[in-house]
Length: 184
Image 1 (cartoon, helix red, strand yellow):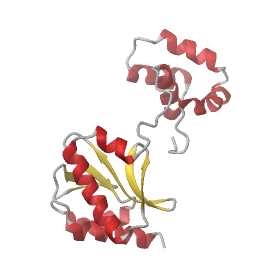
Image 2: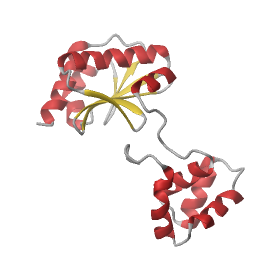
Image 3: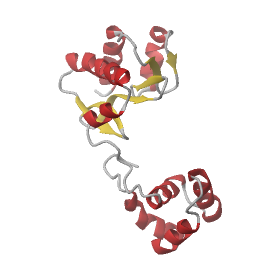
């Protein structure tokens, strides 16, 4: 779901068109499955009615009372909902980048804080209980800086940092500079 259109109901016209039934029909299907778990409801729609994952998720979540996928309107809301140590670390990472690139904008997209330049993302962050994931939106940047991140957990699109990571300014500045260079 794009960050611009987070309303689950925005998927309803496509659902009606693709699966040939009005939403009243699909709401009745969901009403019959009211006590089931999310995975069971998802599987039912996908396996028995041919729903895509996106359409099934929109209907299941809407029927569970979640009318929007947007959880946070601002970065401040995001930071207030996560572990304080993680919030401090992410803010410190972003501060290092913003010090060198003050024109970058801190936004919420896909329910995560991200630095962006115009419409392109430079670095995003997400959290789990045990660590923070940083995403420079570039496999090439990850590959380039992989040797400098040998003490971190490096994945295909992201790298994990400890919740209380002492920010490696040189690394973070280099990653941001490389990502911005890609966008020129």
